[in-house]
Image 1 (spheres, each protein chain N blue to C red):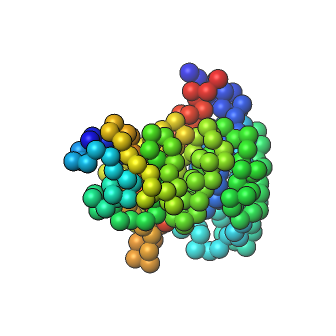
Image 2: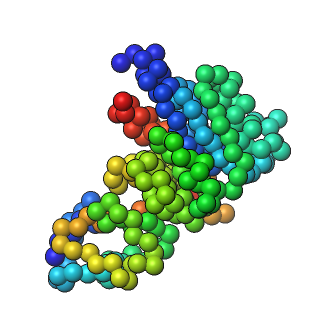
Image 3: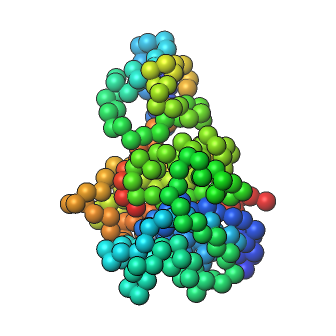
Length: 67
Length: 195
C-alpha cells in the first residue's frame, strides 16, 4: 500500500497497517506529537487500533517546548 | 489592496491567543498593528525579569500580570483593537468557553504537553476553527530550518518542529520573534480569505 506521510509518498508491503506499526517501521519515537489521518485527529489511546489504508493522508506534527 | 482597506477588513474579526509569553505577546503586537478587531488573550503568569529576553514587555512591567501589561501595551500601539483578557490556566474545560466565537486561534504556549492539550481540545471541541501552532524555535541562527506547514484547513504549524528548549538551547528573541510573526502572518492570511 501507498500512503502520504507528512506530504511524502511512503510504500509499505502490508495491505493495511496500524498507526503504531507505522511509527515503529519509520522509527518515529518522539512522543510529543499530534497525528491526523485524512484530517481526523487520532487520540493517543487509538494508535494501536487505528488502521491506515491505501491512499490515506497521514500527518504527524511534532511539539517542542519553547515559546 | 490599500492598508486602510486591509485594516477595515481585519477589524471585523476576533482572534484567540493562548498564552502571552514569547510567542503570544509578539504575535498579539503584530496582529494589533495589522488592525485585527478583537484579541482574546489568556495567560496566568506574571512578568519576570528573564522574560524580557524575548517577550514583549518592559522593565517597569516586571511583577504585573502578563495579560494586563500586554493589554496596556496594545492600547498604546492601536487603541482601536478590543482586547479581552482572561487570567486563567487553560485546560480542556475552559478552552472551548474562552475561545468560542474566535475566527482563528494562535497557540502560544511554551510547554510541549500544553501545546498538545490545546491542539486536541480545539480540534475536538471547537471544530472548524483554524489553529496556528508554533513548534520548535529554541536557540539561534538556523534560519533555513524555520518553516510553515499547512496540515489541513484547521491546523497550521510554524517553526522547525525539532529544536527543543533546554538550559543550553534557550528560547531567544530572534527565533521566537520570527515564529510569532510567522503565526501572525498565517492568521492574517486566513482572515483575508474570509468574507
